[in-house]
Amino acid sequence: MYTELGLFIGGKWSNGAGRKAEAVVNPANEKTLAELPHASKADLDEALEAAKKGFEVWRKTDSWARGRVMAKAADIIRERAEHIAKILTQEQGKPFAEAKIEVGAAADVIQWMAEEGKRAYGRVIPSRLPGTRTFTTQEPVGIVAAFTPWNFPAITPARKIAGALGAGCSLILKASEEVPGTAVELAKAFADAGLPEGVLNLVFGVPAEVSEHLLSKPEIRKISFTGSIPVGKHLAKLAAGGMKRATMELGGHSPVIVFDDVDPEKTADFAAAGKFRNAGQVCISPTRFFVQENSYKKFAERFTEKAKSLKLGDGLDKDTKMGPLANARRLDAMANIVADCQSRGAKVRTGGSRHGNQGYFFEPTVVTDIQDDSKLMTQEPFGPVAPIIPFKTFDEVVARANSLEFGLAAYAFTTSTKTANAISDALQSGMVGVNTFTISMAETPFGGIKESGYGHEGSVEGLEAYTNKKFVAQA
Image (cartoon, rainbow, N blue to C red; front, side, top):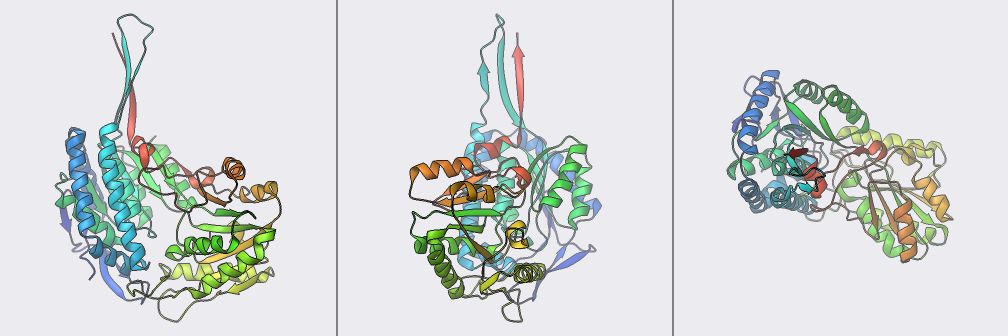
């Protein structure tokens, strides 16, 4: 049911004979799925040469022809959605239904950028000089180095592939070594769609070694990274050394503000579903629940009931509602966060422990009576632990919501248009959802502010991130 792993360089697959390899583990049962080959420095240099050749071909391919190849790849991914989703669930752990939705969303991103690539418009600027035309054009930035994490093995690589290819760039993608199979399947789809050799290259290896080697090369003109803030800052420094363009989608710690004018129990149902999606391993996951005091009790009780009712298990089991954490590191992180809460007098209403002794399962956890300076309130949890905190006034909750260095996503629930407008203006975040947790779509910009990064993926902004704007004055 899994897939054969390999490196994809210059349109050819290599199974890693003689290369360093690491085990890919199913987080639901801790069994090895396959051995993943690592790219050597020679492999990376080969990928760079392939990307250079691919770029010269792809940049000269007209946008309509590029769009046809990308649209065909999207169709192939949809045709193989069940197969790819099973691979994704095995290596990442999320329930199959969630995995299939993600694969479909990845195809949508590719389809959308296939069309948007035809609309990389310039503009004519009225000239003050007689007989002179002044205008701008958009051109592909060049070869891209892209790095993706393990929590969304389909949609995150798809965003970077689609943006780069839609703009006319070639790229070297280093996908996560913990979830390589999904990226392999995406690369297969593009190859089967007729993508020219070298336009998309897929490598794996020790992250620091791969990034430092590639970013030292002058041919790389842009980096796109999704991951932690410390790693993002390090890569940004490397990119700055070569004046390389960069898109950084980093961590978040999303506040959710629930005002008294909504139904607290219905909102709690909605909020719990959002929180425990992918076991909370979502960069835009709702993570700090501020509930106005008159609704606090009902919200907390209903949210806790929903957490208790979730069935944990292998994502391929149709009855599973929440799968395992992606790796053993997350188990330790969750235990540490809960222990810190308890040491500060917080109340664990449900969960708080590892579930079972096989697989990386952690119970859906709800914490109340928590201090604002606890780890759960100040550090991105990236797991199924939810703090619920009461608040009194608008100004108070805005100050608390904006108090952290994060600024990726924020949410609010209210029936008042006045309050909705006020809170969406007040929240310091790159993305805000009012009465919804759906803020990530192919046609909308995805990105944060403050220490959550800069730049966007998706939408018009995501395409422009892979282009250079050129001004021309022609007499």
